[in-house]
Length: 389
Image 1: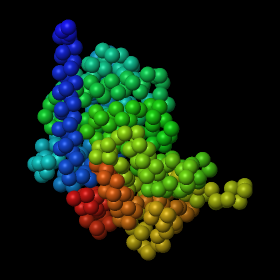
Image 2: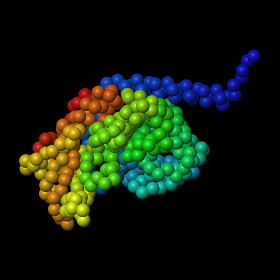
Image 3: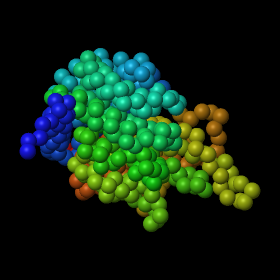
Image 4: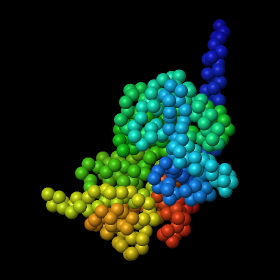
């Protein structure tokens, strides 16, 4: 007995086979060399008043992710870019001239800084998902990007079918992006502060199968209730029940079937500033987080010889006076948690020992990009690049 396939089914089988082959070839290409340096920054951020296109050092990056793009019109969806991205977009050709192997991706967020329903309305419609995938490919090619990183970031999901619909969207985008030679699709896992929601909201194995790289956002964890100050990106957990560490989240994602060769952990050199408000009614020290500043704002204070103390994961912190950079209204003593060569190298070594795909530096303007600390420009990005080479 012969079996006849409908032409639509034949086309679907051919497309699925093509996607599988493209994913396999892309995985082979990415897995060669290991420990990729992924640079990330938001062109949209206020700090772009001092961080300009000429500050980017393409030679230190294998992938450069620029934020951000977002979805407009849920019925006929397309990607729009934040207006400041254009300043960097015009420099892509010069970046690639300096580093011919550089790949530049646009980060596409599910919303801008406040919650918007456009992305989720698009997601809930099968026809809109197809339209978005088509427009995403056209957008990438028209703007000469090498791909996109899709960052779905709303923690409290409003749509019960989000998990399956988001995977469906990724399948459609992957089919189109990977039909083109040397285009990349990344995805970000952002539920790391509520790890029990990672499985609820994400088909981790499915995302890892479709994406060339999956970025686990380990550069920032919320403090536990009752903690008044602390290190926001610990390498290891403080206890068996502590889920807010690079190690815990990495092991969880790997245990869900994500290939280690596709997994990227993120780091940041932002300095977390906590002001000592004095004692509360119980006689305990009270602290308030005022700001996150770039490393170059802290180094003059470090150069005074202040005592550097370390946590069990080698994470450094210092205590002392208010930084000159902070608003004059702030008063009293501060605690500053940050990264240095020792703590950052520990995370790089961890990624290498685990055989992970690499390190994403979020965001590169938190580094000393002007060389104000007398260690040259981008001392931490240079460290990552050097250790991963």
